[in-house]
Image (cartoon, rainbow, N blue to C red; front, side, top):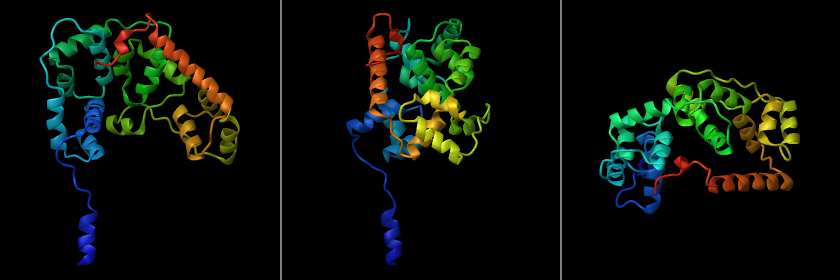
Length: 249
């Protein structure tokens, strides 16, 4: 009897009542980008509660007319991962308006030099978007995207591959003793991309293994990484930086 009571008490109960600011912020950031069930589990709220609050949070007048740069940014963030009904709610645009804008973006696809912020966008989205969707998000031909992804040792996430059941899976060999020793030798002072190339692995695989082993970057490498991040921030603050990457207020 006692074991039954303890087992019942150990079951986590869904949170009820008013939502905190932190919960609302997480809802705004993740709604539509993960399943309602996964978001509810993360927030410890019911799926019904997640959907009900989402409708309140994103409620507003329907937007019409020309798209603001910040709207285009948000469209690209959701395209390829969210259902069209969710995009209608978040963007406050009709399905027809959204699809017309996507068609327009496809018409603007062209090859051009890769900027630092473009590469960040590629790294952030490549694992969870199809190649066709990435063309819309990055505004580049699929061949250019795949070439750059290969250069940066990027691969599709396992979860994405399971959901889609398509796409070429990158199968990595098991880590040998020599691989681990080489990783430990290179990791402190070598850029992660160079390590991935040296080990013939994806960037994610190399970094994940380093974290599992508790490896750390050297102070000099951390300083270099800091300077690289500062340079990127300055680029974003430059008048030439594209404002369509800025989030909606």
